[in-house]
Image 1: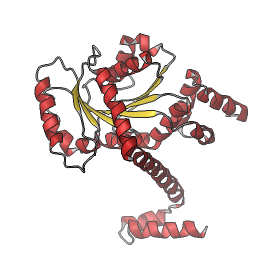
Image 2 (image 1 turned 90 degrees about the vertical axis):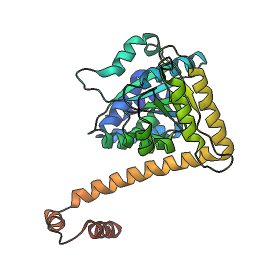
Image 3 (image 1 turned 180 degrees about the vertical axis):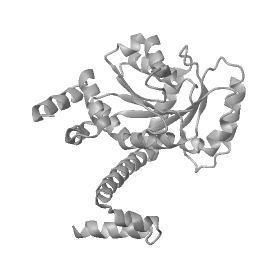
Image 4 (image 1 turned 60 degrees about the vertical axis):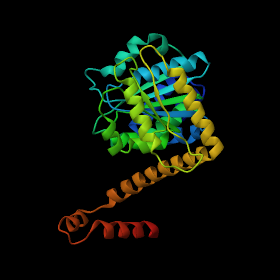
Length: 317
């Protein structure tokens, strides 16, 4: 990419132009061009003021519909919205997320909303982890008031999103039977609120009571955030305003308690750690000889010793 083209792209991103955002996100996703690094460096100072909300939960619980309803409600209040949806569907079928786009033409045609579907799947989680912070930085620089990140529902990407987002919302439905699995996966620890979607289904009250009982046993210090449990209907939008109020309340609580700054610092640490690990690995892998690999394979050496030697070599350079 030529310097003047990159400059135009940066200006387009900062101005919130949809075409520029699409181009910039594609550049970051490929992550194979020096231009991507320069772009991210130039736009970084323009971020930091966006409200980032992670939406997690199993496939089929209505996460996409919930995000769309939340975006519609926010637009009525004048807020601009960015949506990053990690789509587990095949590239052939295009999946349920695209179906939601068709049903919500009034939202997708709104210039105040930008939607990006990110290919997902078991082979993509590691790749996603290297890109998600950068993708968020692009949308932040465009001046979006809110960014929603919808995950595939796998434990690995859920835990990562909890590091990126300031508020993490766990979505489930009545009678899904995911309660025990959620406890095993650590969902309870990483969720700031639980939403029981499809509230018109039988068993909603029972599901709400179960989750409230679980969180009532959560032993935290006095004044800590108490995870709320609420029911919504993402098809009609019922309960979505209540959810947005809860998200606002969570922000106020974090700012009053100092948790807001702590989470932002932890997010920065996570991003830097991931970038550092990736950079070190790229440099080390490029210099790794067949003899060194053979020694590890034959157990003549071990990974810990190899890493220590590699780091010492790097210090000497």
